[in-house]
Length: 416
Image (cartoon, rainbow, N blue to C red; front, side):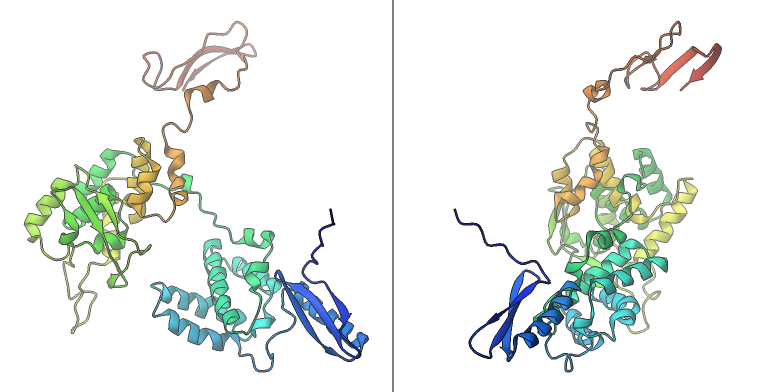
């Protein structure tokens, strides 16, 4: 069998002849083969090949589109951000990240002047300034999206973000440890916080903690979306930046109405009339303007009232998200319910996102896992130590009760 032809790696090429006085060069960059010809001598072709392959190894294409006429990234970004404002709900965040972080560093550059090395310098400088690695990652992903637009317009052929090595990507990996995210671990704590809140904040807290809705989704609920008879909540919209907006995943979903939440919403419906939004601002003139008072309750109002309730209950200070949505998901998993169903209820795009709660499953460690390594480390002549499973009669809820163990001739008393 004939040997398979080996592809040249990026940054390598060759010179070949197409007739008298017509030399061509061929090189590979970003997985694609590039060619250019018309050089009168082989020496001139080799000189051009050396230049383009050097650029390719640095992450540049080597044959840019008219460098003298290519605009700067600042100029290209202005039109891109204006169009993004009409199509993306997070355009304000994108514009802020570009204005504060990306433009001061890359704004004066032309598309072909940005390579993997300059992106790494940007990451290292932002981390040195104390920026959160997650925020740095958001900036890099936004820059990659922007460069895809630049490539479509023909001002570049390679996205420099795709050339970042793994060592550079690790620098802006999120440091969030989801296994240590706090939440209200007891149902009694959820009840105490609910009773410490005044209306309507206690009802909003109950919807978040017993239905798992995001803060904006709670504030965007209307009575036509709450079906008390069939015990379901139809989540179709959210409140963002003081106005109705699409959901985060743009996909409406059905959330089961828990039995403990149904009577709370029934009483609230009788009290409010059951028309329009579930939650409206208690002081419409505050937070709005003279001509246009506030229409929706603000999320910071919920957070401030929750902070006071946690202080009254002598509970650790946690965010609204942790006390409601994260608490719902954690208690759901701890009670042994399905991660797949939880993913649908929370509106996650993939069950992979929901698996951050997998460590809370009661069957995470099975009984046979505790006997996987058997080694007898008991002291000779010491007392017998009994470690009982939770719920057994001899022992304190799975803790060891040890008394009178000999340790080097000294008798010690241990109670765990």
